[in-house]
Figure 1 (tube, rainbow, N blue to C red):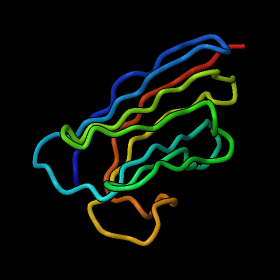
Figure 2: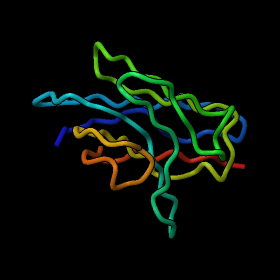
Figure 3: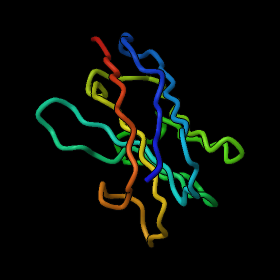
Length: 124
């Protein structure tokens, strides 16, 4: 499994922006996909966005047009630019990576490496 370190997050007013980053640490594996999930209090962890090593990004319907995932393959670093934030975006955001080839990368079980999580809070 790949160790992942997240940064970014914080407190922002509705309509504001935040940028999250995720970088691998320790031994570097081939990461076939990387993604972001989030978990609000009392809710299950949910898919936000992901991007394959080679391929276009894809998003949950709830964040399309507001959140943008990008990846620097040379650095194996993942980003999540969050614009037009809403209070319902408040959650702990987790970076995820897959060191195994799979047909799809949507579910929690499709990823085998996780960051520690970073809190993003959007006030109304």
